[in-house]
Image (cartoon, rainbow, N blue to C red; front, side, top):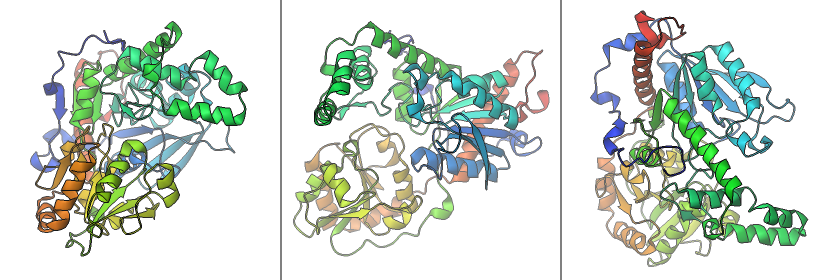
Length: 499
């Protein structure tokens, strides 16, 4: 037993991960008329944050999926968290979007009164059930547990809907979400001893250290905070029974929520298998993320001058920007230039990634959501040198839309996005020498870039991604219908004529 409440998962094999083929490779199922005909399937997407109040990978994925589902003829609603100062906590407001209705719940993570509230806040039950009563969905699809915990899937199941969860990161099994502990140490598994020490650090480092932080002068508080961020919490002493019980309760509850769902989806095979290794003893369907085909740009010839390497996103240390900085610094002057999109010069300095002269690295500043593909036309290759186990990052899909070769680290689901040596390159994470060598080779031989561009296959569109989801929803609906008690009632278009 690993402390997650699950039996050992050594019997779970990679074959338990369902891989959904590209829509173009399979014929449309005959039973699809149950989805796109009458009655129309009603789908509620539940997200921790949503556009336009927050911009991130999950938010953009949810928006793309909603638009794709709407294009298929589904009725779509979204339930999202957004703290509004002029609205009472846990109140609901509605807005109309092009693809349907958004229910905004006034709530924020900092409103949790205890650690238990982060995954089982009873104040969420009433508004979730109110949305279910008002929209009456056939499918409840939880995109992220942050801020919601167990309530959407539990309430959705009570409502009789098909319940679905997508594993966008590790938040279900790791309180930090990335399976990375200070000061950037990567965790490859869930282990109670290490995880509970990390949790104790999140909860304030124990009663004594919490009290010290509270009473200390501001300067000392900052030094204590910095020291905690730069030290490994798993190297500290016994966390204590109380912390262990808190951790076990969360693990058991959230893992049970996933097991009880009708469908669990992961954008990458790696993350699916990571969850299975952590004790999720069930099949996981792999559906890669998609974006609108209309955003694709025509391929262009490699730019002249130095090899322009694009880094897009947050310069957090787990993103591996320091690897790129050191790799570029190792090349002859004028041969390679690093362009960082999503960060200012001050951001780079705070992230410890400054130090290169202007002709070697440029901070291109932040950019509006949806404009990454346009900015990628300014570079020759897009680099994702992450040191943590990424899932299926949006920037990789955007690079495919822009027809730009990818250079990625061999971590997480990143290698699944590249056919090494054909349409991109997979390099060792945190290895500046290997990255410098590859960038030098590409700089000296630009024909390699042209060859890679010709091999790039376009990613799935939002419509295709929605089609894969609808097929998976339908299969779950058929299974639920076959197993449903004869005396029960369900409001589900997925049930078909037999309901």
